Length: 403
Image (cartoon, rainbow, N blue to C red; front, side):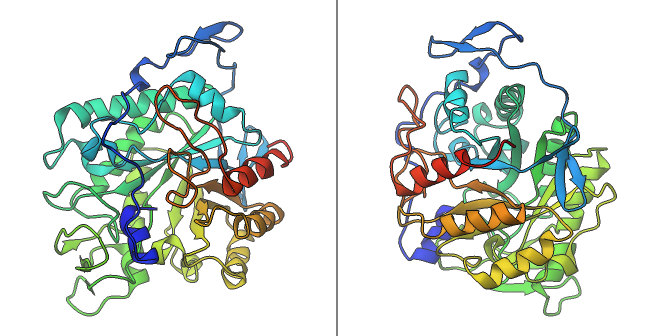
């Protein structure tokens, strides 16, 4: 999900979060104790220490995910902020990253996963991003938070959400990853987290190579969107309308290149690969899926009531994929503050064994985010489900069998 995407699809600008008064970064101060004791949270309250957990073995087994011999579905939500705060909000996170905030999340029964959107230019410390919010400092802040989440048994999905070809700063969702920096990004991220299989890599948030001004193959001819999606090397020119950041033409990185970069580090982590048309078109995913020598590949789709994958036809395609490959709904939501879309969709996913992550645990209302929570700012009691959308999601995941 992105500001530009909502603008394109809904016809009006909807901001993900106000950055006028960014909350202070608290990730570096988040502390965890040792098993069997208590820990003091960053807000001063006493909270239970993280449990003693075995190292994760999360991997693909057929069309399921398994961890330590147990079938796992990834159920939870996106936590936006780490893609935009470093370039426009003066902080690393949009909201608290304290132990007590995490335990508010864990009070939602059924929850086990957070997806964190990343910014390529902030991670790599390039293209003029403020030094205080990029490079080693950005990596340390993200890694500290991931360590906190993992110490409490929460799976973490890291996705390349915003990128910046050439010398541009990543400030919005572009149609595809870039050959200039995205390979370096994934090499670095994989090296950072390959020691923990409970961290999942989502190669690119929402490819939309079928919605660009031009797409040219490496030989200079007209290019096929799915071939470029897989192999890269195509030159892309973004549209000049619709709110997308204007970066000029650039050469894209394909899914196979990025996956190979991850595997080149020795990382065995599960990797998610989203389809075309804002990750909503999965019609040619199986025919074009990258080759993974580890077999730890997962199909990812984004499903909203206003986007591409919202009907029975899409679910039929997903059922075909799910017969051989695990599927994670990387983003799931609706913008009408109701549950008429997510309700049947989650029922279907539960029956099919598909994982899903809501958009989002944020500070906005149900229509603008869409958010399942409210008041997710420093010092306020985040974790409240304010509307039909959030209430339904909370109650639904609580009704699921233990995962």
